[in-house]
Length: 113
Length: 113
Image (cartoon, each protein chain N blue to C red):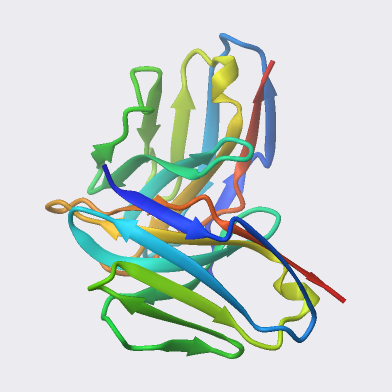
């Protein structure tokens, strides 16, 4: 059974801090690893990672994948209160033509002013 | 930016009643999904749909569940006889093609009383 484990489960920081969120996985047919941000409702897409060692960056957020050690990290620098959310890691598994995501429990990030 | 839309945002129903949750995926997307998230738990895969048929379903997606794409734009999830444990947030998602990110709707919160 595919497994995605995120740590920490929750984190409280002050504005301006840098945070690192972790995601480890076990999956049979790995296709890609995705990060989503979930505020009140829909998970919104942040990054999709398929290759090891290549950092993806969007503003203050960045992410990298290690396919040998089976983990990924999401970094947020100079955090703002608007970064407060649940950050979800998901692994895309495909057997044949199927493609589905297995999610971790998420990391609840709270950024205090 | 195009988005996945879901209606209603909140549905309350009595145990044993049928419910239909509606979704309009992004128009040029080809793959459609339903996920659910019970309060405080992981986002879980229910079913994937491609080329007018189910491509994969989870153990959760039993005979009480069905999906349909009746008219080329809507994608519906029907639960025939709801149970208390069906109470959850149901997310519709769509994807343009294999290896691209899933885009999620804002969800329908289903409450079964």
